[in-house]
Image (cartoon, one colour):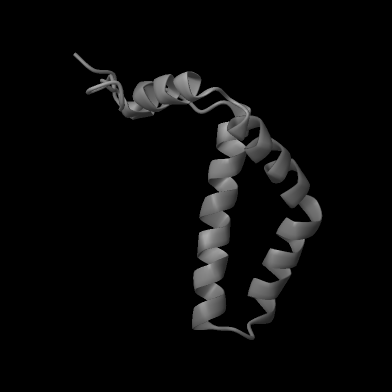
Length: 89
């Protein structure tokens, strides 16, 4: 039996990067739809001024994780085990 992904919570770095990614995708879409909207520009500026450094630090921390740890974490979050086939996953 597998554990649903919702039962596994993200750690602080994963949460920070995930939230930032969602926000930036949303802001990117808003910029395409309304390129001169002052509110969108303000939200983007606020992110860059207040949150970008912490997000970049979290992203760097995630990138430093060994591949095996990342694979195990993906499997844990997905609720299943990734299996290697012929030495590669």
